[in-house]
Image (tube, rainbow, N blue to C red; front, side, top):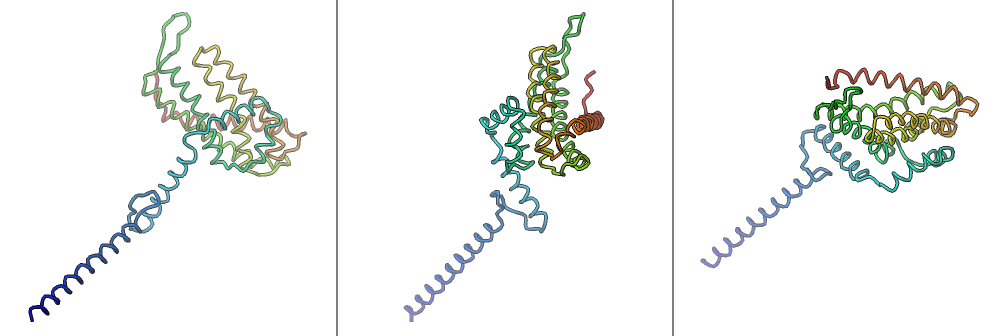
Amino acid sequence: MSDKKKEKANDQNAQAKSSHSDQSCHQTESDMAQEGCCGKTADTKGETSSCSTTSCCLVEEAFSRYFPPNVNDLVSVCREVLLNPKNCWGRFANDALTIKDVYGKYIIWLALIPAVCGFVRQSLLGFTVPFIGLTYRVPFFKGLSSAILQYGFQLLLLYVGALVVAKISPKFSGREDLTASFKLLAYSSIPGMLAACLQLFSLALASLGMAFSLYGLYILFHGIPKMTGVPEERRWPFLGVIFLVMIAIGIILHLLQIPFAPKTF
């Protein structure tokens, strides 16, 4: 009888261990099912969980795709735009890059040049007041805030400008293509962005940035037919309209920036 009791007790212990093991396995699988694609546990409360997980994945994908920048590719594009302004547009028109790609691979990095160099000039090097010889420097955090605003609005200017250019292209017998219009404005702005580093040396050299901006208009002029489909005979009036549109958008964005801009005096 005692042997039968022992066997029965052993059977009960084995069943208890098996049940505990099954519960552990189910719990592990449940925990894994709640894992987000970014390796973080998702909140199981409906759409909030889905949205946060998706956002996490998008940020992680963008970060891994565009950071760090491909320096060789970046230099290659800048060299192509600066040295081959007439023929570079065939390459840009036929590539498969999206607006997000152009931003991530080129523009977000190049737009740092005027923002960072402007900050260094204003807050670190300062401005020398003519005839007095005094050097004025914008307070550090005010200069930093101004640089951040400049950077953000410069990125926004290109996209808003592309929206307008794409809409007015059919008025000049062209096609409405937002991606191509964005590429046209983005690549032609490269000379002006690169020239911003001249302000680090002297304000006199900084004035050469205007000449580089005019060179950017020359580059844009040659890209109009391929990127927008506007006939060559209508390039000049279309270029004039683009110029006025970008000035108008720049003024509007500057006015919107004023309430957020730090007061330097």
